[in-house]
Image 1 (tube, rainbow, N blue to C red):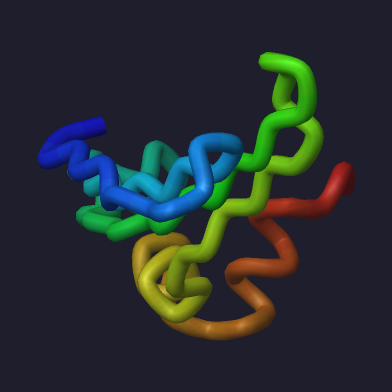
Image 2: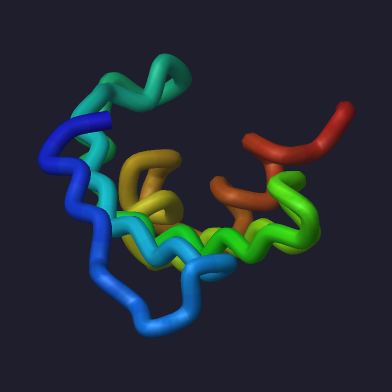
Length: 77
């Protein structure tokens, strides 16, 4: 991950981070350049909730460009 940015919040139990990744999809050789937003909540110093937000269209393009390509990439078949 690159360009990690931690966004300040008024709640000390909440962390919001913005991260970027740059890579290549092994199956297709296409670039995979994604931006993620991670929301992390804690209770008693332990992670109680973790959510990532990202653009599935970027993943779909890296895996071939169609919904069928994306489904195939994530299937067990």
